[in-house]
Length: 158
Image (cartoon, rainbow, N blue to C red; front, top):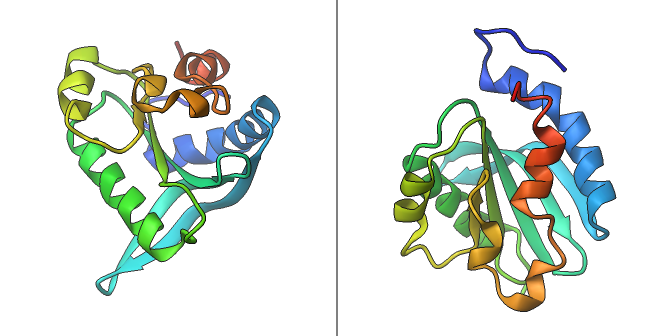
């Protein structure tokens, strides 16, 4: 897939979504695709999750947000909001808390570390170590950020 500048996040999403869906479903058994641009209504406002999966083994939802360009700290706040909304609106009593993944074109480890330091929800940022925030028993059920980036590296132009 090739995207030439300038392009919008929606074009990036559209271009990656088919490949990403297939990759995640093949990579780890247990991923079930719930939706793309999944609609949530909170306080009479509309929100759309880029990708929503449910992991059958972990028994939790996984929200994935695709971002063009550098990671920005506000992305984590938005992801925390999305995960909380999914937990309240979609999660059943037997489900585990929602996991969030923010996939950026580029990252900054220092910003990622400061942003996630006091967030108690498992949220991963691009290359930033997702498994750092996960309990040991969950680590083997999810692809590592490195595995996702290795698969996506060619599509993102680097």
